[in-house]
Image 1 (cartoon, one colour):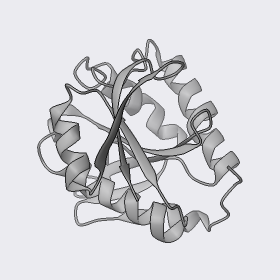
Image 2 (image 1 turned 90 degrees about the horizontal axis):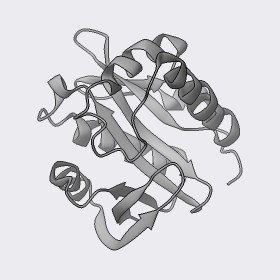
Image 3 (image 1 turned 90 degrees about the vertical axis):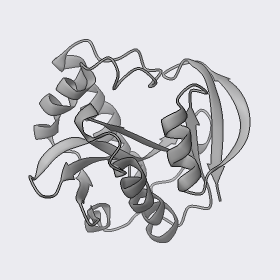
Length: 178
């Protein structure tokens, strides 16, 4: 995928309750702390994060690298009322599959509040209306019923079961939205 050149300001999104923005170095520690919760990383397929240094590497190399290489990537999410980091949402280009993936992860205290759906809608708008993408996919473990419900609310439909290697290891259900 070639880099999509859009103004960086287009990566700043706002919803009724959320501020969605590019990651910054200040997000490394709260990201690490969020991922210490085994339930938060239960269905991620990435093996969790072992140290702050590992989280820093992932954000610097992967997230910042994606911004530089593709013009977009995962975005930090703040609870607007408190200006507090609560997780991430957004898009990731998966070069080995030539697909753009929608993903999200939040502090457990914010589960069940519709945040994944709210932030997902903003990410979908970014993908289709600002980045001009034609399709999004999402990979979810079949037993992650909550995330499957979110994807269905966002208009994704089941495509097929898949087994992935590399960064995402496991048996997934592939959903797509066109």
